[in-house]
Image 1 (cartoon, rainbow, N blue to C red):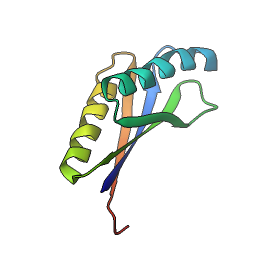
Image 2 (cartoon, one colour):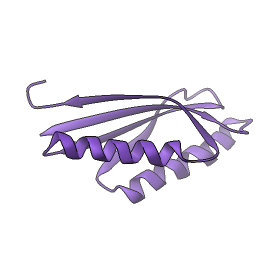
Image 3 (tube, helix red, strand yellow):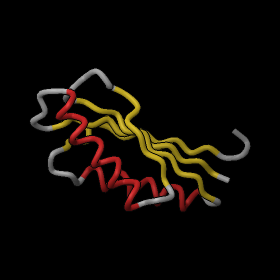
Length: 98
């Protein structure tokens, strides 16, 4: 069993309040979970900043390759959104021994 974790640090476009931030981040999380139902996604950081967000994505799989493919697909989905700038992406892959 493998668990893949992806942390995305994103900069939001023309957002001036936390309410506007939620109106961008919530649909993004919903889109990730709709398109890839086997992943879990949540806003995990920068909760008090209105132009930054940290998105955490996790996937559990029987193979490391499948884990990496799912994380790649989720990263691409977020990176290609025009209203979002992806600042950094950090990955971690855990196996049964860790």
